[in-house]
Image (tube, rainbow, N blue to C red; front, side, top):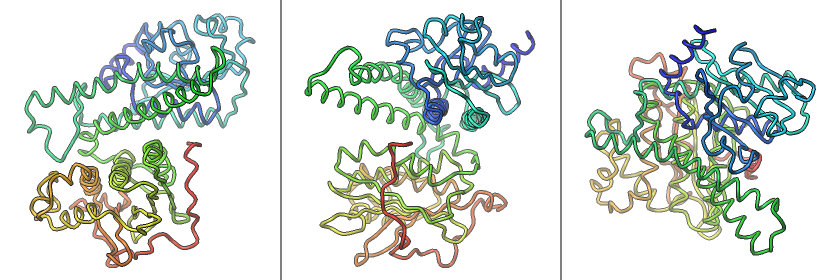
Length: 471
């Protein structure tokens, strides 16, 4: 037991998990587990010899806004039930804790009235158990073998995603890449970027408290609300959730330096990934009176991509178009196969202006295609100034530049298709990484017929927006 604990502590230190900072992939895993199993509380935690650290959580406000778990995201290891999983390296299924008098006396269980508890071990790539993914409910909740298999798969994905994000990145450092080698930065730049990343992480706790309190007020737990109070509470809830989403995006963006060094190919459901991106952007689109619409070519859902980088490509591509699209515009995203490539097309439709892209984006993409060395690390101003465009335009299209760079990092293409008569659209071509991994030059050539037709949205596909609220 002592040797196993020693190995766990060494593994936590090597992975930079020996603290109570949250981890984006663990936050996502907890949310996915809670929503899929329809339970009020879920978390991903790691543990040293005495303390359990909550690295990602959903529903902690259920314990009360002054509960130490919500405030500090840690507790003594013996207060919960995770130490049973850590000791056995096996899942623990307790659909009704009232049937187990000893386990029901655990401090966390006894104080919160938990009835159902299910947990699976959090296993690293070298088979070290460092923590658990656990779900909890305050009423009896049957957990099937399929449910536990889903938890195991989610825990494996979350741990793998975190380990890939740490590949080649020194512990405790994070940098936002703009195509410039991080070693060329001055020490003060590295310190500033690290502090920004750390402060962004620390934003989660107060935002969680605000969102938890607003949610409780909205449910009128402390008494009925007047119509105006209900309206204001809804605004606070929506704004807090938007802030939480933006914090998560900042944290993911801060890890791109490590991810751009070495690709992490994995099987990606492009429909789910696209829905996740559009769900994240949905609150921002609502504020601009815009609609986000997704269509997918049938039977073309699974691709081998670097999931984190592909997500960033699509996120910043759509976000940039949203920035320059007017009110009542519909931003359309279509995914299809083009030869060996996944083609992601983005354009917008406006009831008065028709389909296409804003002139600023078209000019920017044309300038970008005329850059002297398109393979070189991009800069924000150079392609614009070199082609006589105002550098002020770059403020709104920096996301396009990042999308282009990340597409190139995945051996892909960033292209502008269409024309003034049929409307323009941006098309990002991403190859299956399995297909490109054997090339010595790190890329494959696009098919000869790489130009996409102006009617890139396949006829017959529904243009009904995806049910983002279900994600």
